[in-house]
Structures are given as C-alpha cells and as structure tokens.
Length: 80
Image 1: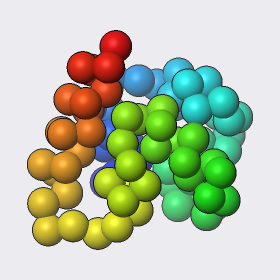
Image 2: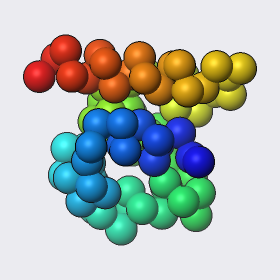
Image 3: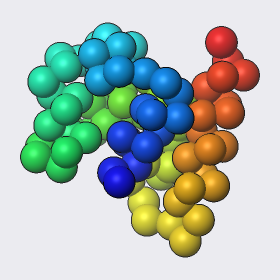
C-alpha cells in the first residue's frame, strides 16, 4: 500500500478530508496517492503537513515503513 494511503488510513481520514487539510483538490490527492501524479515540492509538503509527517517519512523508502507510519499518525494525534 502507498505510504500516503497508509498514513491517511491510520488517521481515519477520507481522501476528501485529507485533501481539505492539505488545501489541495481531492482529485489531486487521489492521483498522488495512487501514483498517477508526481506532486510538486509544494504539494508534497502540503500532503506531509496534512498527515503530520516529514517528506522523508512519505517519500523515502525504509526498512520499517509500518513503524514510521504509526509514528507519523501518533505525532498527528498528539498535535490535535
């Protein structure tokens, strides 16, 4: 599963809710999440902020992807 989708699911957000948090269209969010579009740096940063993560958390491969995603979701929950 795409890390953006996994993070969004961990936060319990719909694509529409996540897109609104990021200030981008739902269509753009879904295309990036599915890998159909490569986001600009600005859009990627908006996505990361909406998910409470860094760009590295989302776009750099990791051996422990699941653990990192849980950490991002935990950070986001703590910020609310």
